[in-house]
Length: 358
Image (cartoon, rainbow, N blue to C red; front, top):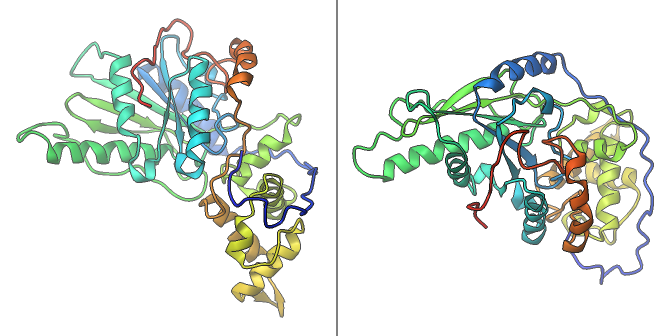
């Protein structure tokens, strides 16, 4: 699903055809057990669930570990965040693939406040709070490091902006603090369930939750490598470490014949040799240890560039074509919500997404 530099300049380059998926990491922190309990206690307060996924892996990054704690009647909206890191065509196909199963879905770039304003609109159309004094309570869930806290901060920033430039005397954010949710570049920044007020008229509150996951499915080790490649699972969880993740990213780029890394590094041609590549990067950066290039620095640089989109827009999941969607519709009720192909809502709800923007 990657798109980038054409294969023309290197049409004969023999990309590696297979990858040795040697490990299935198990990512579980002590805080996650506490978080699952806290989320289970808080979910009954919530009218609306916002599930944040990474647009570069819209199905692999689905949060289905918390399905069983959600009460019947809870509406859900899927957010494909970081959608600027995939091509517009892939982003729209991903959104349509999820919507086609009946799941409401929006594209966002929360770090730039893009698309986030539609979340509030979708929530207010789906849920009418019974008591104005209590307001609407939402909860953001998702795997680690997909941008949950950034989405909350963006929603708050937009509310303050709307208040500043809105009607004089409006009380949109009256009493709302500017204190942001804690964010960071590594998974596990949010450690506790915390709530934030987004607006005052109407009253909207939102729970920020830590990323919770439990990877035990050894039948699909590529899922775990995808999550490592995106920084959702720390590389140290793999026996092969960051080198294995870097090797996987190089393999996927070459298979898609997306060779922007060749231009970025100023090398003559693509390569399948991750060790030579990372040693070259380390040497170019002047990072040496005991007189030798330190490959770890080259690995870190390569993964950082990929994660920031500097090798071009790239999606790690296969996004179904319209024809393939016909076959996948049959899988809709085989996954418990909110699985990648789960129903649009939790049992006992009816939540249409007819007003969601294009």
